[in-house]
Image (cartoon, rainbow, N blue to C red; front, side, top):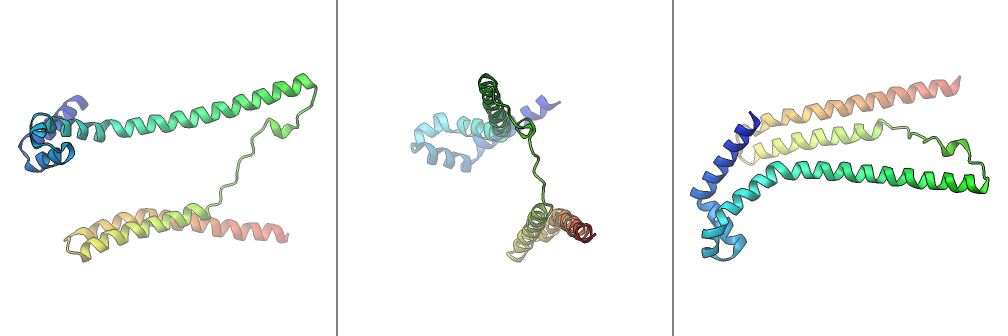
Length: 170
């Protein structure tokens, strides 16, 4: 099923490139030579569009996972080397060396970020409506979701702050 839809997208992009003067202008602009664009440009734009749409996000995800995994492996290798050297020299390492301290996450930070993202999305769509795009203000409702998620984070932070203050008094 996915191969059929992928081939349909490829066919549509190819048709666009073959019959579209905009695609030809893009090809001429990229290659700088109209004769070269006629023989080479149309299919190049189609291939670049397919690559950019389908494969680039996958490659980016793979690279991010690879860098994170590599950093964790290097940290573990350095810790193991340090542990081996300490054993060779007869030095006893503290217990904190073997356990990683987890950072406490403050719900204030993501709360503020989500509220700002929600407001930004809503303002974007309202601005589009003001500049003449009819119906764009309907998209402002999308910004409500992150806005209220941010409000929830802020409520959690506020309730935890009150609870921690009560525990400190007692």
